[in-house]
Amino acid sequence: MSGPNTNYDPVQVTPLDADHVEAMVADALEAIGSVTTTAELKTVRIAHTGDRSPLALAYREIGALPPHARKDAGQRLGQARARLNQAVAERQEVLAAAELEARLVEETVDVTLPVELAPRGAVHPITAMMDMMSDVFLALGWEVAEGPELEAEWLNFDALNTGPDHPARGLTDTLFVEPTENHTLMRTQTSPVQARALLSRDLPLYVVCPGKVYRADEYDATHLPVFHQLEGLVVDKGISMAHLKGSLDHLARALFGDDVETRLRPHFFPFTEPSAEIDLLCFVCHGTSVGDPDHPCRTCRSEGWIEWGGCGVVNPRVLAAAGIDTDVYSGFAFGMGIDRTVMFRNAATDLRDFVEGDVRFSRSLKGGAR
Ligand code: DAH
Image (cartoon, rainbow, N blue to C red; front, side, top):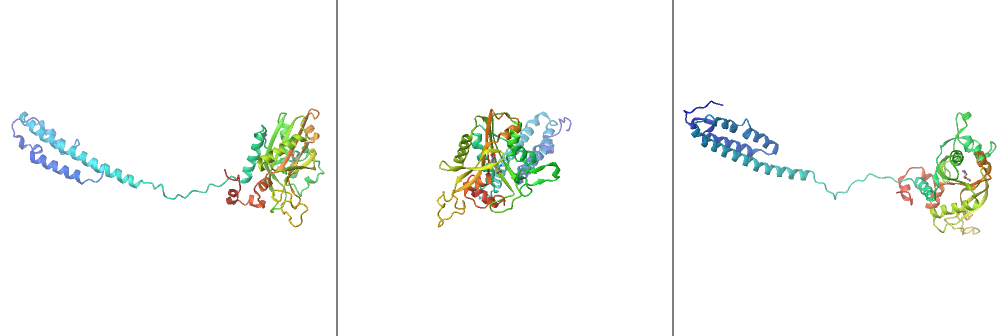
């Protein structure tokens, strides 16, 4: 900044000269008019009105003028600054509006465009059935128990009164796991969970156990080497076969509807006495194929009934093996195939469909998708 100078004519101070100020303004207005973005405008605004702009420098010269000349120069610069500020503001408005418009266009989402949804898959029908069957019993206040699939031979057989000579122990049925001296196997039934529940839980006992079981079976339309069972076990005071029948009928009605028909057919299981198999009236011929050779039924082989599972009153020897007083307590147990239950409920005919992983099969079954 120059020092005070009272002698010279203010028009001689170039930065404050009217033409010079006018040229400065014209220069700035041109720059403001030529920018195309708000970012550029900011640079131009700083260059022409900021602290280091020619305008700011001119302001500094005012102090060097004689007092009588200051007013004029100050007004000239003030007007110049006002014009520039206004030009910047107008340009800012125009550019900001254009930029907003451009962004809106760029970010437009056409909500009517078809989207490609990733396939969601479906709950496997067996999983859905396991849940459905367990829920029936949970609603009655029972608990769900679990056990390992790699099981001790003792729990899978001995604890269930299946002595060493029982045919079920032969290598043909059971997948023993090496080294054989460890006496471990892939459980052939969910019944060992009965033994586990008896040993670990307090009485009275009301449990179901859904799970995988393993047998050295062929893989075909009616057999899988890995399949699923639902085990049930009740131990309480005064339990009889009637409670068993009532519970199984309740399950059958919950799954198949009120008009389902069941029957208990005497059978043998080492861990129940008396034992029975529970059959369902054939869901295809409803028993009409019996004694009618002209209309045979492939589903029940014209027997009218289809085997669903095994059951019985718990053999007191099983209870005693778990240290339970058989004078006070008695129980019932049952075990049925979950895979077969899905087949009955949905009239599926080939068990292999359950394991071949085609989601269309899962989707096609009632209760398969949630
Ligand atoms: N575990 C038997 C099987 O795999 C089914 C069974 C029969 C389970 C009678 C039971 C029962 O709990 O009491 O064939």
